[in-house]
Image (tube, rainbow, N blue to C red; front, top):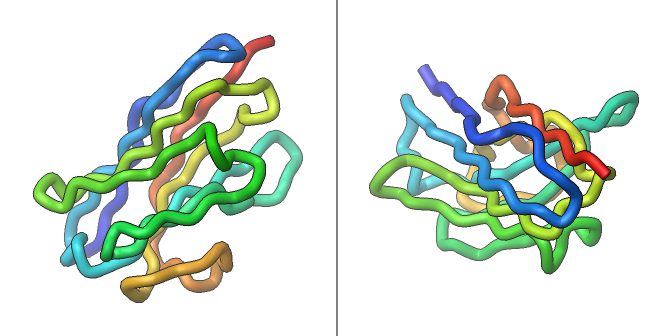
Length: 123
């Protein structure tokens, strides 16, 4: 059974940094693209970025240059390093496993989701 568990969320001031982790189990982690999505208060869940099994990364324009996704296949873990955080980054952040080795921003491509981690950025 696939399980994804996010950790590392919290409260941070605007301009600060935070790192989220997504620990995966029950799958051959290295074979799949993994992504981060987020859902702010009263908003739809939106794409943040994706890392393919080969390591290529792609980001939403809103986070490009501030957020970095990485993965450690030996630890079955994906990371989201967030810098220069803004109040509009406040959201619940979810990690998700794509059904293939590459992926896009389309939520329908992702079969498994974590429970989410709250990130709150104060102004």
